[in-house]
Image 1 (cartoon, one colour):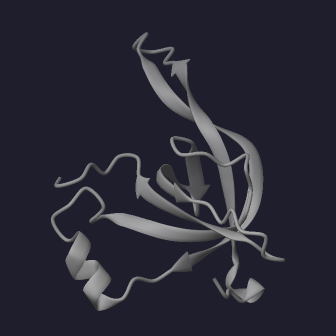
Image 2 (cartoon, rainbow, N blue to C red):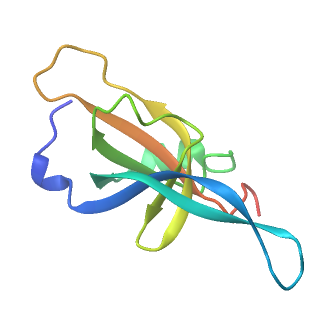
Length: 115
């Protein structure tokens, strides 16, 4: 996949969510904990691709491009511009290219498919 490194213009945090106790209610709320940061770029979908995923669980997702990183796995959380997303799919580049890139399909944590 030919990607211009200048496309990676967004700094994102990769991490997990941990439950933190609310002092007022005693309940637990998810709190984002950053593990590391990477540069990423948003990959736009073509119109036929958008039509293909319309009505599926992937309808409200975003595709990010990052340099190949085996520490990033599906299920981890991403914080980008103050919003927390979950990695739904990871498409790693396992080739022996000089500059491999991975595609991460992310979905906003509070937004459920079809809602």
